[in-house]
Image (cartoon, rainbow, N blue to C red; front, side, top):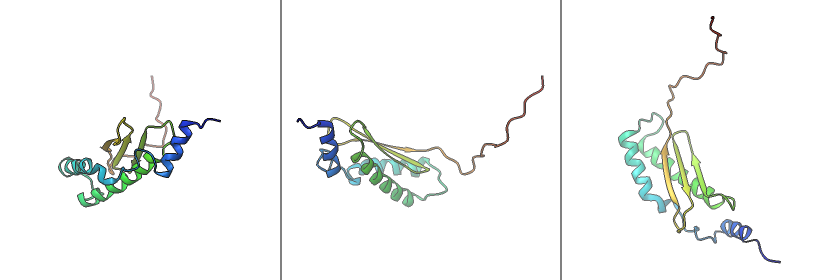
Length: 123
């Protein structure tokens, strides 16, 4: 009976034997550095200092790498996020996945939607 190649690839990823096994947080140090420059220059965040942001980016990158390495056989991405940042790793044809770091638009001062139903206007 022939082995299912998709199933074998899934098993190899979980054992760390895939061609992506060498991906670490330091693989994306350039992307993290660029994100930190943008954070310091353009992002106003009451919750995180630039130093805390760097720690968050490294932690989220670790989570995204784990999600990427443990993804299902037909999935192409590893994603990790918190309230302010989203990191996406996307499969490519070479050994290094693409990395996207996105700052989420969020305000702690944003008004919460009213739970009351809107009144019907009179005609």
